[in-house]
Image (cartoon, rainbow, N blue to C red; front, top):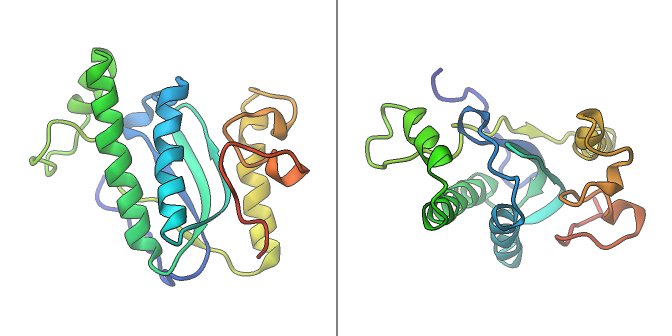
Length: 176
């Protein structure tokens, strides 16, 4: 499959985005791997990235994000997390996942041994309050629909808790 046809058309506006681990490999099954993504988001938040909603599942994550240069911030997020996650997997000798990341790597990625993220993020421009609510609900209901929890706020790796008044793991912007 070629490069994504989806584009961030208004990089300063909120977008719904999805990041998928290459070949849907389950990497986010350990708190340490999830922390790498959350730490990067915290750093980018200090640099102007607004996170409105998020969820991490075992092999992909969804976000509603906004910044002055969202396309660049998403590239930074993917690049930094890929490096740190591959480093973590190597340090912890998680050979099975590293072997898969090497095997499924796209041929044109010949400057590296591994590819962590699938190409593209399938961005969707948030066009109004109704769409924002719909995307946030979709994000929060993802673990419920998969049968992992009965209530969205029970999923630890999500902003659903923040939206019911309980502090979550990552600060979110709830005014839009």
